[in-house]
Length: 117
Image 1 (tube, rainbow, N blue to C red):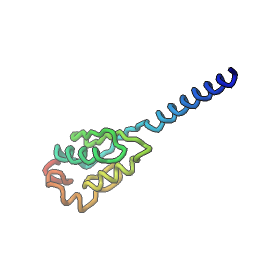
Image 2: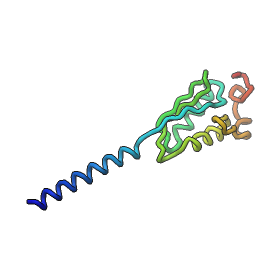
Image 3: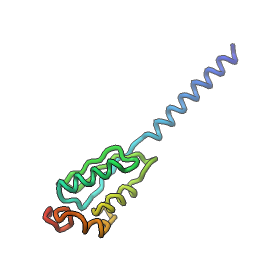
Image 4: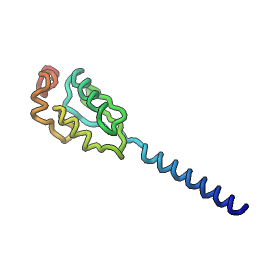
C-alpha cells in the first residue's frame, strides 16, 4: 500500500511539473517596432508577411503612428529576426535599415518620401 501511494505521488508530481514547463514554453511576448511604413498598402504587405513568419502569433500595423505591434513566441523567433524580416520587405524597423533593393521595388506611395508622406 505504501508503494502504491509513493508511485501515485511521483506520478502526480511529474505530470504537474510537465504542465508548468509546457506553459512556460508557450508564453508569448509583444514588441512595438517603429517602421517607415506609409499607407494601407504597406499595412497589408507587412501584416501578410508576418502571418507566415515562424513564431509570430499576431501582428498589427498602426499606419498613422508607423508602429508595428507583433506578438511572438520567444522560443521560435526574436525581435531582431522580426526587424530583419521587416527590413527585407523594404521598410526600416527601429534601427534596422530597409533593404535598398526591396525598398526601391515598393510602389511609390510605400517608399520613404513617396506620396504617403
